[in-house]
Every structure is written in C-alpha cells, then in structure tokens.
Image (tube, rainbow, N blue to C red; front, side, top):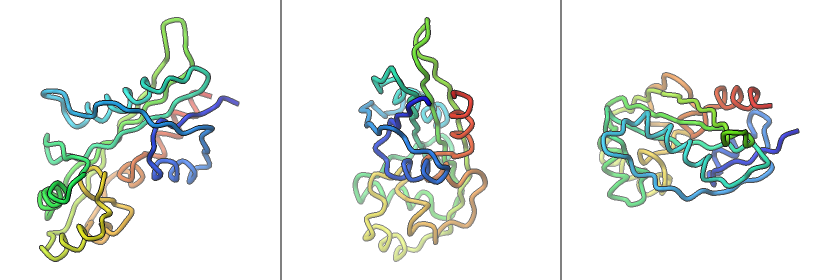
Length: 189
C-alpha cells in the first residue's frame, strides 16, 4: 500500500478525509506565498496554490495530497480573514448575493524519469448568502469562527444559518471536494 501524506495543517481537511475512510500516514504543513499573481483568476489561483503546496512537500516515497480554497465575487478574490476588519468587509460583500468557492486539489505521485507526476482537479461551487443585518455580522464576528477562513466564514459552522443555497460540492466549500479527491486517490493506486 502506498503511503499518503496530507500537505495541509487544516483539521477540516483531515476530518473530511476521515469521512471517506482515508487516513493519511503523515500530515505536514507547507509554507508558500498565497498572494494572487497579477491578472490571475480565482480558478487558476486555487489550482496553482494546490499544485504549489504539493510540490513544496519534500516527500519522495509517498503520494502527497494538497488543496487550496479560494472564495470569489466575480474576479475579486476574498482574503483568508485574519483581522476583524477583513472579516467584516468579506461578510458585507457576501451579504445578499451569490459568490463562488473554488477548491483546487493536487496529488503528487512518486518521482518518475521526468520528475514527479501531479494530477489536479478544480471544483467550483456557487453559494448564496441571505442579506445580513449589522447584528448578524456583529454576532458572527464575536464568534471568532471567521479567523483564517477564506471569505471570512465557515460553511460548516455558525455561518450555515446565513446560507440560502449551495449549488455544487458542499465538501469543497468546507475545504476538500471528496468525490474528486477519491477519484484522484483511486487513480494513483
């Protein structure tokens, strides 16, 4: 059986893998620059970051799984909110409208003659938020759940009460599209 390394410190991704019966042999964190390149679309950013994380994991004797999630309104990429001001700005922008969540997944296989083989998948999901009141935004900010989350919210947490609809993959919005991830893993074994 081939070893599997998850190149992500996200506890959500680890829990999602467990949901489909996959337990990585190791979990490592990669440190890459996640800033968008000039003119880069949200879709391409999600794919590039997933691929970069897989490449940055210096593991030669295992499959390396990496992912990245990007939240966007049109071509505007929302940050992974680190400050209250960023989270408020994200929630105000998402309020009363639909947005897209793109998750790129990359699976690096063992080294071959020309270097490692990296297979990728991209999943786009549309999420619609209700119009948020100032009180709802304030309450969500107080929860602290937004910290480090793309777009300033966690669909699997308190923010679920504000979501009108999800068209596409729920698990992708959480951080790892399970169907596509399972396909990548099955294809590499």
